[in-house]
Length: 331
Length: 307
Image (cartoon, rainbow over all chains, first blue to last red; front, side, top):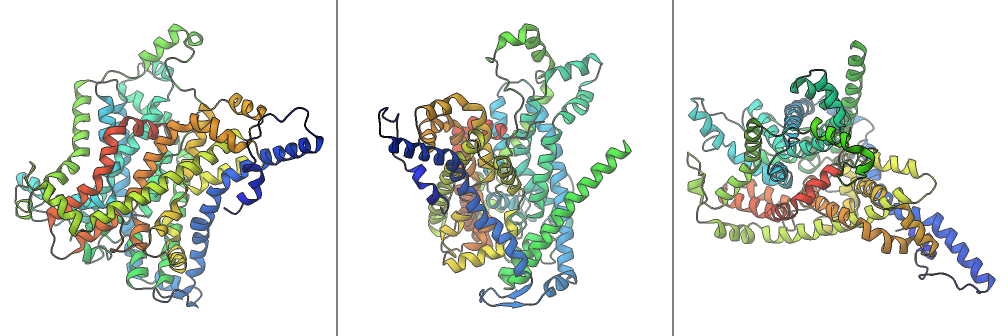
């Protein structure tokens, strides 16, 4: 690492031990200097690796994305960049596939995030009871988190299969006609959201559980002295008590939702994967980004989609802020 | 995605029973017991069992499908009990579907990433928790801020960078960008600020030990439990990471999730082979969760924002 060289004298100083009491003055001064250098420099050397790797592989690419989005770059000739100013943005704005992907990202995001977090809240509440086998239930709810997007999406693809899938079989038992989970827009988005919900509900529940356990008990006691029912206690003590955790999970799920890629890709089963279904009925921005860059070979346009995703994220947080402010004003 | 748990600024003292009971007094303790944590009633158990079944069933069914043959998988009603072909299907996935190579690749990738994340996170976490230096708080805020940057946004330049370095389709292209994690740094910082007494560090200084030596012989032994948890959580994430490996690797040299996409991409779908591959790719992590479930659960909960 670049900065560690400057600290080398401090870092590689031989184990000093107590310096010999009667040592010559110069040696003492030297070791005092080394000590100062160590105390001042070592902390920076310790945190440097994180910042160097982040700068090189995250920050620089993020910034450079905007530069590339102003160029035409082909996948086959990555070193040839032709300046086109804002052409990519103008084209994207006029491209119906972009708006389709944007809307899909938002709808799948809502369908997958809202039930997920509500169910996580309920599950956390259940896990917070005193009970037998509590460790089993906690580990069990974390099992989906140990499953990769790829494996999960493959299984759910089969469970949602039109002809022999378990869901349609069960629906048939209830007298409902088979649903074409892949080809129809809303069923497809619902199925994809199910994969997301399955993978992340338990994880979020554990985050909520940790926060619930940190709520001081006297708040519950005060509430129950006031005659608050269990439900009232939940809505008036538990939920406010874990507010920052809820905000945190909303932020993370929102980021995750704008980036959604693996679930729709694999759900589309190969040929239809990247386009998000034959009619792009579940193509997300993540898939569009990949399609532009690695299927149509237009890296500049791909970078433009990346920027659009970033803007979506920023807008989502601005909207969240606004809603919060409006709500606090009305209440 | 590497952003997953943000360790809390735990101002509240840990709620351990052995913690200074004298100061709290019996009444307070009693109240705590009474106030929170009702016993679970039958309804709660029923709901929890349903949740557990929903969580586990897809994986159980993966195993069922991986143990039958294609004709049986494609029948209605679908099979619910394991068939006889589990091991032959697993062997087929290992050989035919490049799952063998993918497993080894994933082991390398996840192992290296987890090791380096733990090492760098412990170093930086120690510095943020216990060392005084200029700009410490600003840098720490910066670390937290980096958690909010979705890695997918920089994928085009990153891809160009890798092809320039000659790392396209090579494992280093997957390993290098994830050598560190902000979550890890923050996690270790939270742990060490509480678990490592200032006096220990001071004592080391008085003995004339330099910072690296203090780190090695004083910090590491204290940090070990948290390092183990961070290792496992990072390993899970690296093993399952999908988008970037999918972009930069190809089928000649895949990680497990990349190989799995290829399994399903063919026009003729070999369902039980696909499920065998999915099962194979999940088994190492499942084994880890079964053995170390308690530690992983407590690690994730310790890393939660509380309040």
